[in-house]
Amino acid sequence: MTVAEGSKLDAPSLARVIRGALPGDRARFELHEPWLGDAEREHVLACIDQGWVSSAAPYVERFERELARVSEVRRAVATNSGTAALHIALLLAGVRPGDEVLVPALSFVATANAVAYCGGVPHFVDCSARAFGMDSAALERHLRDSAVGQRGECTTRRTGRRIAAVIPVHVFGHPAELDSLAELARFWGLVLVQDAAQALGTLYGKRPVCHGARLAAVSFNGNKIVTTGGGGAILTDDDDLAERARSLVRTARRAHPLCVSHGEIGFSYAMPGLNAALGCGQLERLEEFVERKRAVARLYARVLPDDCGASLLSEPDGARSNYWLNALVLERSHASERDALLECFHASGVMARPAWQPLHTLPMYQDAPRAPLEVTEDAASRIICLPSSSFLAESGK
Ligand SMILES: *Cc1c(COP(=O)(O)O)cnc(C)c1O
Image (cartoon, rainbow, N blue to C red):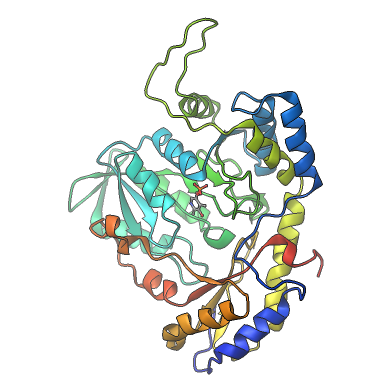
């Protein structure tokens, strides 16, 4: 993102311009609304007619197959939330109580919470100024300064705790620097777990972000590009990990024709069939959703004047972002005007929102270990997310 500093920011006129880009027939534009149609209705009714609505429903396997296919990964295991998927992915990555896990400070809280569920400690790292994903160069500097890599294990100099994993997040649907992060993870002996909650349909190079992933998590919450009402999935190219995930989300129940018995402490995290049926309808439309969301991004780009004191975040080179959320980035000198601008947006029915409060400033993570976080703190103070629902633009426009 390049921002020419020095322009004046006129909040009411900026709000008018953005409102003007959106369809005229609505009074209010939420940040992200689901878009459900006939395909979803038919699948949900078929699911009810089958009588299988729980996690034992055939629709769950069907959804998992479809999801694995569009993600170009061998296996998908559907869960009842994206957070649950991330929790299981981290357990499978071998995160144990007391381990640290590298987490971007600019993310939704679930990324850090999933680490805490494992008894681990999130170790916050900075984002890049270009696309707000984890900054691999800054991370490399930080590890050199503060960690020791020995015999395939990485420990911190300060606490001696093991750093077990690293979780890149594809912020706003723009792919993180996966190649360099994967190389860093290999060098330091960290397991890379993708938090791809926002990035279904995003291509890194020419392939879906989770293509070939050892461990990744996606979300189907109501505000994601594809929704199941609520839900998520663990994606993996490893059949053994997929079997372990499948067992763990289903209370680790042992296969037995008669007895109910469990081999370890599992979780009740499986996705119900009704949600999977809705998801089957949504997945059929994924490409259309991506095309339309990219058209929403073009709509905003077309109307935003040069020299208005803000610019739009665009996808990194060599990627096809799903533009899950369009981000308006204010010039640094206008950070203090962010909330006044938000009020102007809301007054005109544009329910824009700031980025997440950086995770290291939340009460439960205030004492968590961290790298220098200047870019995160600066970026979070001047990002405004704009309404980005798929139906706001027609594809091709
Ligand atoms: C949505 C999201 C999740 C998971 O959310 P659920 O609501 O549990 O499905 C995790 N990480 C990020 C970055 C997200 O945006």
